[in-house]
Image (cartoon, rainbow, N blue to C red; front, side):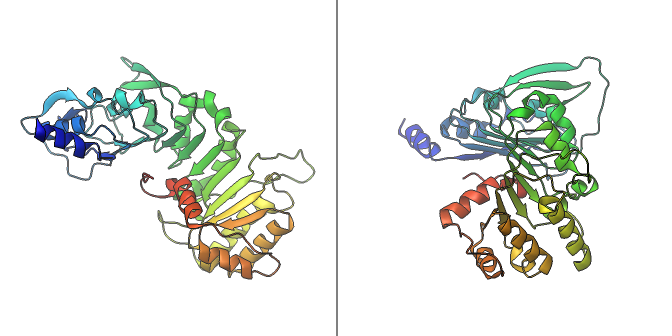
Length: 360
């Protein structure tokens, strides 16, 4: 009919879909309401799917009448490129099993963000179901230890031949990587989330053992423990990192005092370019975010920048104001400033610092 054709035309303009759990004890995130069913049928060009953390109270009962027994898996999502899926306690089980199989098999899917919030149940190793999954993703963001399953419920065996970039939101995400350890040598880009738990241990060095061929490292400097250096007169360890991107944002915990912040920066700077540094292959450092505007006035930061410049390491910033500040640092020649297009590209690369991936 004419109305159906108009609906299909409008549906083709939809590029994002957000799925909200209803919060009931017997909810099943794979079931869809009739209106949702009609929308998904018409939206044939969806590029990104988001499933945010449950933000409504969990209640007793069942979903409203009229829910279809059909599931999201019926929809092919042929053009899907990005998925940001958060499982919640109301899911049963609260695992990535809730992600529709049609999502995993999408030929164009490149970025997947998964994790479980507030997982507390454990029923032992008996009757554990194992599911094999093949995906073409190149970027995987891991939010929690249970991202790839929980013993006693369901475990996943992942085949990820194109995986190149790993993003860890919090420290326990590191242990989830045991499920995909065989792909560590494929990883070329590592990113860490803004989580103060990373201050407790040198997670950078640990992840570099798992990903020995990584060349790009992205970190929020005030949420990361400084990387260890080589011991004097001992075998020198060299990290493969050639590009270091530093963010000065810190939103997950109490701020540091001025003295503590200075000491923390100095420890990082010594690990990056001190005489015993393991970052011997460094070629470029990018200062990400406007927070560096104020920090560049610190003499320790200026000494760090001058040392990098003296070593022939390229300095740049995605913020024009920070790039202008860099040009004023004595001992540094003109620092390149990104065009608007380059700035937005860099922000896209640093998307793990945001609370949710943005679809570009």
